[in-house]
Image 1 (cartoon, rainbow, N blue to C red):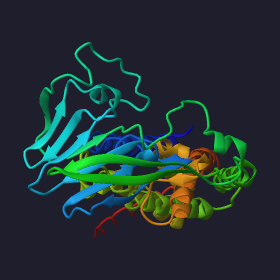
Image 2: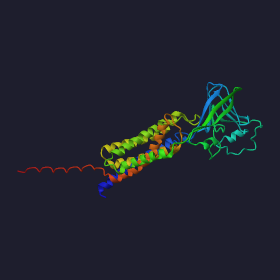
Image 3: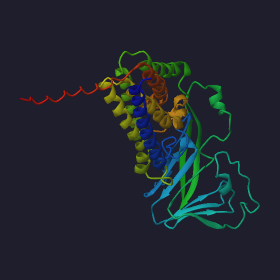
Image 4: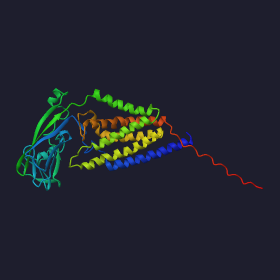
Length: 367
């Protein structure tokens, strides 16, 4: 390797170091946006929803999250909303002075995880005198209510097991509450939908990976690799802006979108450098940017990998576009890493021409 080639490698290594430092700084600020927000699942075959709140309560919002896994209540009124436990014992009070939870209620411990695997302390009993503990100063609370989701781990509901190729209503549930002494009934349903057939979607994912990798290993110019970079940037931005509304007990919607946008904007910067390099015929630098972009795409897409084989997707906007975005981030990201390595190996960026030697100054004529 000549001196000029070593100098080019050193320059590219410094550029890579600067970009990686920016990546680490951005991810340290933004944090991983697993499933966009909240660290839960991004895809699932079950889905839950609230059908009605009777009577309707202005200022009170009830919704099901995480495909039926969690129930969230927000009470912005001046009247307290009470939620009983599974045996009718006092469990929650949600009102203007925050959320109070009865430490003697068995529901306090059963609702701490998805499958009620926590044991009950000896002090927990349905007949015990309530002992209230404040768990939030805000009038909102989120918990695993086991009436809203399927509780048998590792087994499908009988109606689904009998006909897994069709959608089903698994349960129709109700959760009783009390608003200022007035009985309230929250009614909803849990449904199940068949996931997309693997024989249909997995060849598409593999084709996307192969086409992106071929852009770096087989194309005569870095142009196709630049096109793959542009597709990755578009998928990353859509993945960020389609962030679903998070639980209000976790964060604001604006904060969730901003957290998802930061890595997407960093990827956009890397893609801009790669596309500009391709236009200038610098295939080696385009390949380097493809390597970095592919890694960034995998960082964004891997937390949502369950979207690829699930029937339902957590996202705002069309679910198909959300699924396509994750597929591009994962299959396209891996393809860019492979294709970027190929471009680095195949292309040799043009070096600037050395400066022309200066003409010697004319000697003065002596008489």
